[in-house]
Image (cartoon, rainbow, N blue to C red; front, side, top):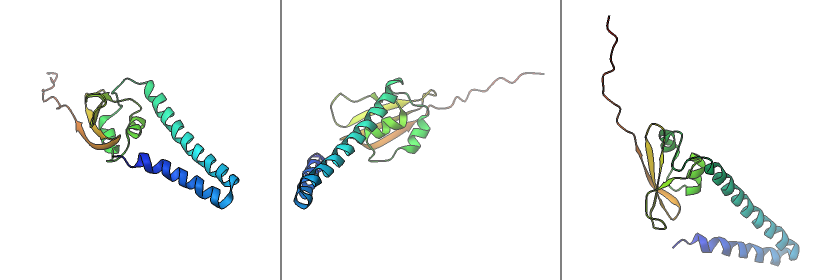
Length: 140
């Protein structure tokens, strides 16, 4: 179970109660204003990331190798969408854990990411083999 879904609202209620106890209604107004500002900042960040992602093809990234280098365990799906500026191609069944997304670049390299509860657990970079064909050399 994700305890943050319970602890964050409980902490907000506790802050409002402590502000009322210490400063009365002006304290409640200040703490409530701070909580609303925090929520609006996160909402604005989410909307900006999704607006940028809406203009790009699903599952496309500029460079899969650079994305692989910038990923860290524990980052959120929203953070990865902000890095790639594109929504990932969903490979797993919808609404089932773990969620698996793939981002592919123009060279057909791709990064496959696995998310559990919205957090990155593992990822894998695939690069297609380079052709070993000999290039024709112009003769004399």
